[in-house]
Image 1 (cartoon, rainbow, N blue to C red):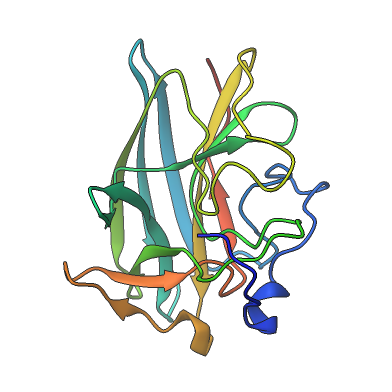
Image 2 (cartoon, rainbow, N blue to C red):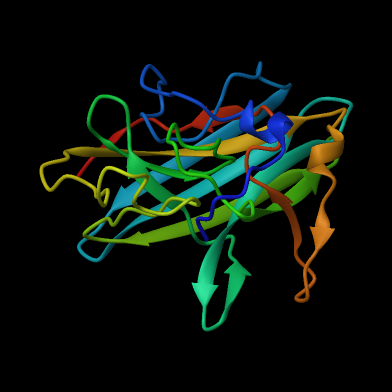
Length: 206
């Protein structure tokens, strides 16, 4: 997917260095204020995987956009799955599971296209529940890949905690967040397309 093709400057401005990010150097972006909503998540660490069960409720009077369907390779295509999560190294050395928007990595590489992620619009007063599973050992999964020019990235073997974060975009939604309908009917947007707020669970011991 990497190529010497420049992407739109507006999208590039939502990438950049994240060394001081509370979500890790290559984690999701999250500078937006919190919308009026409630979020609860249970993270359970088992022998074969980490399971997350969450509940999100829009308590405001405007619609919100959940970024809750990461694109997973499926044969020659991509499936946008609500039971999948991105897996990256968290700030402080833990593991971050997330369903969220990611900015462009701070690298000299460019991309010929922007990876996409599935979204769900949540009306005022509406509640969405989700179940996510990530197999152990936890393996690096980032929408822009695993090598940003300095060699393959991976989850360290000595990580001792994990948490989950859900990305939410408040309305009015920017034009860049206008969903596209995929062949399977899923609504998707491009990464690095908007600012988001991240609702996160407490960390759990691995």
